Length: 417
Image (cartoon, rainbow, N blue to C red; front, side, top):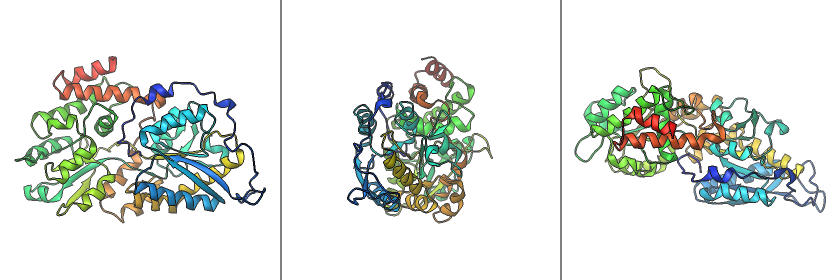
């Protein structure tokens, strides 16, 4: 699942293998011919679409099952769904591509789309009359490869500042909006066994995901991280750790670990996502609020990363099933479906016209939703080369946080390899 907190390991090297998809045969074997309503003309059986995704645990597994079944029914089809563990999805897609057994409908974590599209495994959605009109720009960028839209995601997520209202109220402070306020507030809230601030900063893509809003909002860019803007963002984290506001354990924390620290009252503020709401809401006596991530200067627009899954139509060579699968993608991205999925999955609709009404129903989601119009796709600039940049980014902040070198030298060394 995306929420982009998942760590994809060694995917880039696996994806470097060329796929001879041009010769792929259809997965259906060219048997029956569906009618316009999706029912087979031979024997009247309803066409079944094979679906592959990685929501293999509840509640997401059940939520997506119902959404897929509903949209397939509207298209006049049924689904046969396989949900695999997240780390297994890309290797399975590559294997299915080489054995010509790709599913009819495929869900991908959005940073993976461009790498899969580059292999020729996906069909551009414009062939089915589907466009990204009305969707947040970053969402469209994430599902676009060489100017063609290959997927659409019904909902997205990002990260924001989640704070303990009771701790801040007791200290008489408000959630910080700038970097200077963040440092001052975190320092003030650090008492006893409670750190003022918590973030996930491990040496993997999850750490990069957490660092991006600080880097991007300060004008840093993944194409070249050896810049003062990126070094300043690294220095912010170094300052927070040096003055004791951020635990050194953050170097190894996952986002779930950070949430555990916050829930236990060991962190007054944390960077995390809306997928933590169920755990936080179940914590007895926890009174929390959500604010946008502090910007370098007051009034600056926060540029946060976009998570979420995109739905695609693979190259199966079965044009009738492809058309039905495209209808399911379109249905999943209808206004009604986006709102339902976002509500049930603690995510955010991807159509900008839906953001205001959706966030008005849940005060905790507003800060996340307000960041979506300016949020960026991780693969928007570098496409399939994003993993290389992500590695440079976490290499840089880890070197500086562990005291191996200064922030300026850390970004220089990481950029130059």
